[in-house]
Length: 231
Image 1 (cartoon, rainbow, N blue to C red):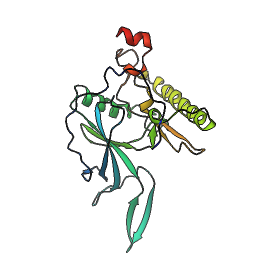
Image 2 (image 1 turned 60 degrees about the horizontal axis):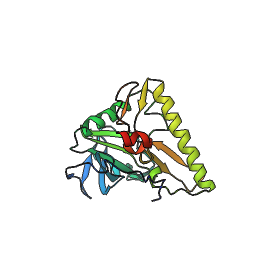
Image 3 (image 1 turned 30 degrees about the vertical axis):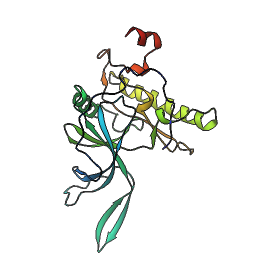
Image 4 (image 1 turned 60 degrees about the vertical axis):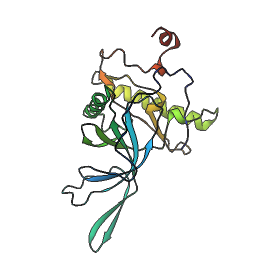
């Protein structure tokens, strides 16, 4: 995994208290049509209030409706019975016991119902909701917060992709009088950063709100220094 520009600002809220999650490697979550086998816990930047896991995706047996696979898959035929072998990883997000975690996760689910959000290439895809506190999402290679800045053309290409994605996401939300109050490097996902086909997407829509609401939602690390010192 690669890295994106790391902030050196003080972290007044670096870590939030969390209850130990019951999800461990090997545990399988059942979705409507897909099984999600937990691979590992993802640490992140310690500013989120959800537990995050990397998972392997496979088709659920006896699913009555076979939805389109979240990503690439290989269709194999064995004794005239189609068998799906997925080449896919997913991210599992489970709300912690933090006071607003479940509320934020449910707000994220509702954000994908905003017209244009689920189909826009600038937002990470949500696959399905497992329960009130657990959702499954698209997996990408790394985040902007983990990418080391270097003054070269590769980095400039990443910056171009990130800006295009971020501004496009603002326009999509603005059309419906919504605003994302949680833009930060850790919420910009990246894949293929060493190629000519960089993928950049916005993640964590738990603080997407109607314009004019939730004035104090801005993350500490994204505040101007003078604002941070007065908070």
